[in-house]
Image (cartoon, rainbow, N blue to C red; front, side, top):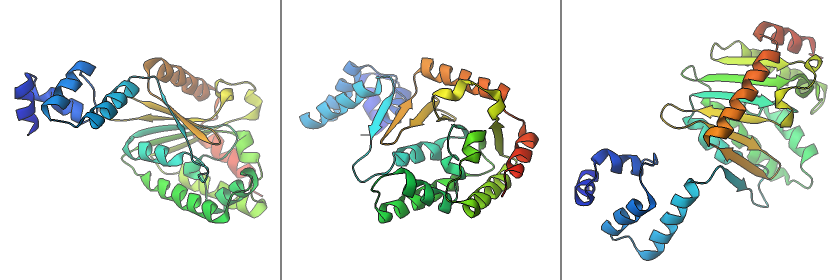
Length: 252
């Protein structure tokens, strides 16, 4: 059946079926069950899809990684590909989208106990692949705490290349890098790092990563809270030119 035929048989507007197929909601659980029945969906698949429907109505999504994974960044990478406006706040480390390979390698070698070198190299490849999203059709804003820039990851040579890379990225017209200085003291982002992703036709999503889990939030209250955090960081952070001067002053 086409979407139009399905809509006619259940008495809906075709746009309602289209919204459901494209994950935009707009139907109740009973209506979903009606459509699945119309499509002669097998019972096991009906139970699975209804469970997914209920899960999609929950606040947030918590993803745990497997024993061999170093981080849940693959899900974040999928979200990043569709976002057209990204705001990244990083409290302790250089943001993943701005990391060079040597920085990432040194970070995993020292911070992930017992990590397999093969897994580390695979994660580096994945992280660098994420950086393909940089394009003038999107907007990127990075708020980075000064402590993240001063943390010596990988030694002097690695940090020099890493800081130079950030400076190079900061001159792109669609990339903004702003540093929250130590002198700012307590700040709204003290609870931890996160990424706010905005889309053309979907609700904003907040992503917060931990060592072995990733939390994704899209409910209105959470998004509004993190928006206020971003506003607070915006008030405390150096402007772009001040930030570049600070980063330059940290070069070995």
